[in-house]
Image (tube, rainbow, N blue to C red; front, side, top):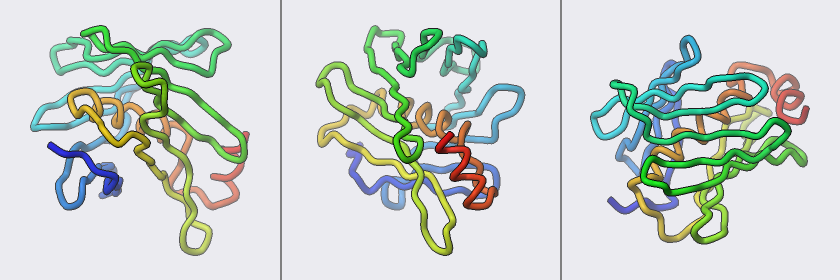
Length: 171
């Protein structure tokens, strides 16, 4: 499957859908009891977070088989992402004028994808995702896109007014 820069997130009820043009690539359900369902290629996964001061994030199958793990150090704004096959990425948080979450590709030493807030009509805000690499390997990309969006949704409230959203993302 060819992934292009024509990727777009749409929210339908409580589900965020990622589309490549007209084709649905993955869905993120509502977070319940610390777990957010992830659906892709007719399979179900779960994104979960454990710990508060030193959080670890997981994407697992329904049978609790780990796909990837992301760990943060105690004071670190960088998360170390490791797939079960040993592939490694990093997750960086930047907060200059607003929150930006970047997934960094350690193979090429460059940003893979970033998530940030975009404002549109009448001061409303929504998540914006930017794919930075020209050549993307889809076997891991969809899991990374789901993880990145799930992280961003932790800090973003769609129904909040602009002032609340601005204060949350610039704090």
